[in-house]
Image (spheres, rainbow, N blue to C red):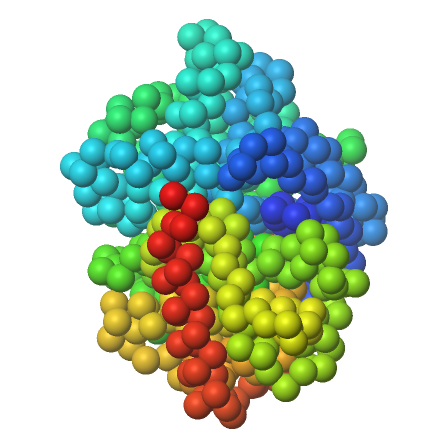
Length: 489
């Protein structure tokens, strides 16, 4: 038996999964949580060293289980988060700036319109602090060690995948893949190269950025605890989930419920420019063919449930949210908008803040929990409406994955509010599975065309209460408009 390992460097945890390479079946896994810090309002940081050491730990665990039979490691990762480090020592010069961080929102909001137009046309993105370019610019301007290394030509800057690849290969490979590059706001997704005009505008020299390779490329050899193993196959987490869900043809889509909610809609080899506030992004580049997707994101989904658990302390565990939500017949008129760090697509408003409306003396924690779960599904409905408008295609079914996809109440309400079937796979860890598939394809252990046949459906949620769901959605949109009015100003 041959194994492949998927290293999933997510926002809240670092995980490694061991798969049977021939059948794509999960065999063993290891996980370590990663701490996020919030030093100022809107700021989100992580310790890059912690990310690396915990990645090495979970990889060692899986390699020990594999007993020398692992053919390679595929990597998937939180995408826009950036690390700056010393090319000679591999040591980070500051905390990793996480994709949720809003410290550069004012700069992005005031970007010149001609640059905003270049960003939209060439990168498929929008001028938002979500993406990597303004984060790198900020670090160069505010971290003395970064400026020193830049002058000495020793500075490296990249997304989490490039940092881990650099560390795991002992500095021999400094590279990323096209899906991660397409999230930097520096990469022309049509020409498949960094854009010189944007590099100049942000003041980021090309030489500090990683080489860009295909998603199924070779990324060198990792040294993990004395074991040498190939790194092959890399993709950002949402693109990896698209592959893991076998949504590989034009018109197919998936929703991942993680820290945030991400909806990707495959547009084939066509790059559709959104007029509805969505993003155009690279889905993957495999066997020399580049495919694209429309993407919409809700910054807070699973993190909203975590807020109920850790912030308000009204939820004993995330898993309990389903039982508590079902303990009441409805949310009692309560609506929730999860704009903790602004709103993403289609609004891109960094100043919007969370909104909890419709509270009465009779409101209980169950009503609030139910409203939070409903808000997650409503955010997905808003994104899908935009994708239908942009593409002209009405989806009859959406594939789902991620932690919250285990919540049957949420999945049923998602089907109701979308008016479409929600298809849940037997293998819920689609993000890691996509990285495993990429690695297996890169190492010649399977063919990319075989992925669709491997996906097994566990359950299909069929719309039942569309009329009631529409009322809830309409109330959510009203609350969202209020969140966009910036009462704090």
